[in-house]
Image (cartoon, rainbow, N blue to C red):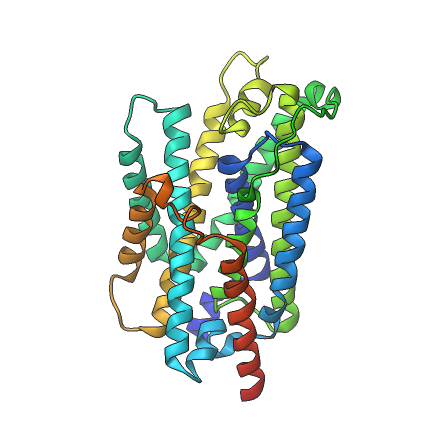
Length: 343
């Protein structure tokens, strides 16, 4: 009992670590080719939809092992299918982040290196993080969020003239990319899988909707800041947040983007490690005595990250809304009904 208590993740820890999901997603997938207002509306609508889908999670008993654990107590075959679906989704998202971050580092910092080597090295570090467990990963969140907040404030101070002179323009007519809410979607799935969130229904509700609100707020702040700093000059890069840092701090005699790159790298390790750990935890719920699950899940994520774009998780529809509906609403709804029946 005491061991379970020490492994519980507090409300503040889960909110902070999931906020970093949104930060990393903005670094890797922000598409500023659309109008800022359209992006924020799309983000708000997507977040609202995810918030509604998360309602059944509040009624799932964490004392019975969370979403998968409750289902396992009634029918192991359905629990096995649910665990595999969660593991596949989380591994796919981890693979997308591995691939994208390796490309980000290659394009902006190490263009004479090999992105595949970067992917393998990052995966190795994340594998170590996954073995340490969700609790240990979540403990890193507070310092990372403080680091991120300090650098964001500094960027805002040095870019205050650009932000103050920002004027909305109709030049950008593209539709917002669906990847803008991928961080929030992945965070929602992680909330479904983690069985050891602290407290009863009130704290669980605070964890779920506090996390969603924090992820949404972080995305709004970062996307707005990037668009305002770059102004009409945005839309020419795959990684506009990097351009915003370089352009916003152009009057400083030394390059400060190294501090941002260090932050983004550590956040990437924390987020991908949590995804791998959550995917492994889903499988362990069904096979508690199995070994090397983290290694297998990491290998799957690496393989997915190395596939060509036509075979990527996004292209194959693994990350679409229908999948999210099943993982975030349907499976937790079944679990909540079974949990209520048992009580």
